[in-house]
Length: 189
Image (tube, rainbow, N blue to C red; front, top):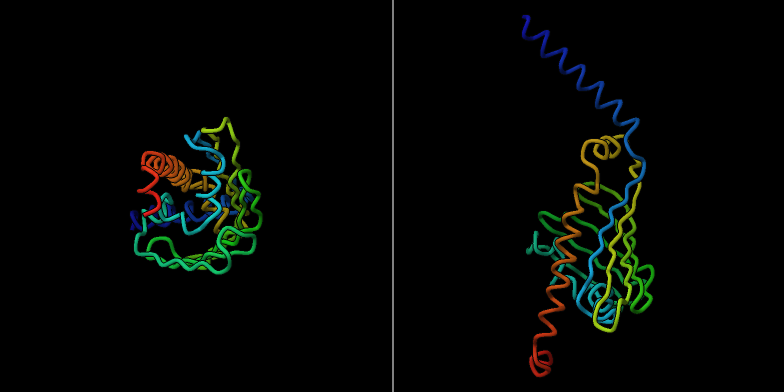
């Protein structure tokens, strides 16, 4: 009986802590990673502006290779939408909100499963010289529910997906390096 009271006491404390964290957890989140890319701003822009190029460098495509992607609209243009459905990546869509060549691409990101949420993503491209760029990948959103605030307090979004951003930036640089190493006839084939 004493063990049952101790377990019940621990449970009450855990529920109270979870409730408090759900009230005081972060209302907003921001994930940001940057990397110097050994390619021109135009080459970087081509990778991030066109959804059809993402499978080569996206850490989520690598994590969930069986996911299905659909692009609706003219790829790379404002209003174009990509939706996906995967075992590990869930379901959702991204719509291009802004596309300024060689400078910025921003998206509205909507998850519909396994949970519902909305965020904004942005790729900022800074030409360092004719063959090097700095790419900054940003995601911002709101923790609108008590459950998302609790999750934000226990496992901040930056810790959850920051490494995915880092992996994606690394892979993007690697893809562009591999493209540079191909001869012109290999690229057109």
